[in-house]
Length: 137
Image (cartoon, rainbow, N blue to C red; front, side, top):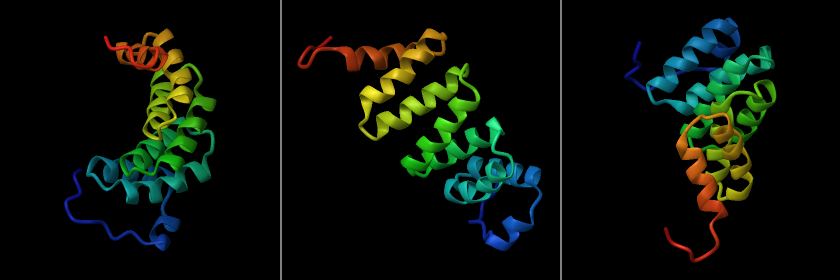
């Protein structure tokens, strides 16, 4: 379902939701381009189930989409801790660090994702950071 009107989600409504319903609403809000509202709702999911990797992933995506980079970094760090073999999680954390101009830190996660065969883009990001200053091509 696509949500077209800006949502009016109160803290009381979020508090009264079941965890599964909060997860589904968070998904819908993120898909409908309301990432800040999605993050508010998804906080309930990870607070209730801190071991829920899908919840941390969705929360990280919502924060990233809302340009809330520190909370996105925290969510993706938790996701990597819960799912260390997820190449996607390492890529997401690497991109979040890159977006904060912390390229050297992000490279660590791009290297891991690249080693897992996630995407040639991770290897390219590593090459860009490893390239000596002033070298082109």
